[in-house]
Image 1: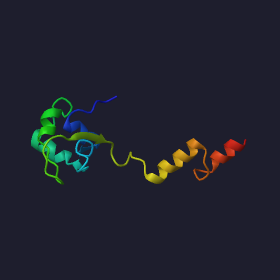
Image 2 (image 1 turned 135 degrees about the vertical axis):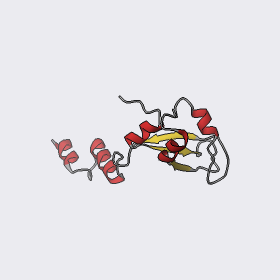
Image 3 (image 1 turned 45 degrees about the vertical axis):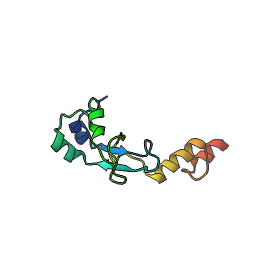
Image 4 (image 1 turned 60 degrees about the vertical axis):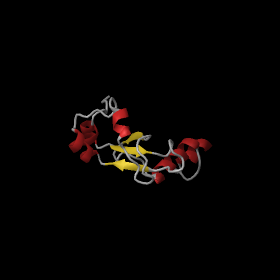
Length: 111
């Protein structure tokens, strides 16, 4: 398994970084996608987000409320790997055995 730690590793794998202000400041609840390419250009591709998280988070500013720091960093896979809502509903319907998934769940339950 590959460890995602540097900005270059996020760029190579196509993953996104998000700054979330929602859990720290419930009055703001803002989440924004960070431009990983611009961060890698400015901080260097070998910048380790995991090891230098405190330094990194202290310099982020919320674009909605203007507060600095107190953010969470989240990563997410490329959009091509994320499930669409319809696909997720079909998978859940099959797992639970509800009609409307692929139609085979009810057949399996009857057999």
